[in-house]
Length: 112
Image (cartoon, rainbow, N blue to C red):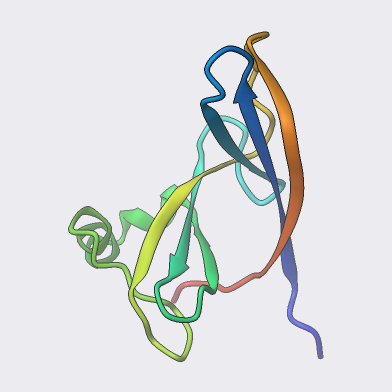
């Protein structure tokens, strides 16, 4: 049986004058008014999305604050924060243009 997956679209924008880049993550698993967070494993590079509601758990909130997040599935490993995942595209300034668009397909893992 195949595990359910969540699609995350990764947009990379560049500033027209400075070439400064901005990366925006969009997924239908995130709310429109509150971002989820994308974390990836230091060793396996597996990605995990944590919803802000998960941080109501005191142990998880402490791990996040102390940058001591660990994966929720084996093999257990340390995670690094990659960025926020939004439910919709924020308004883009006219000074940026799209240089890349790609998709990530991440397994859906619940926290218990």
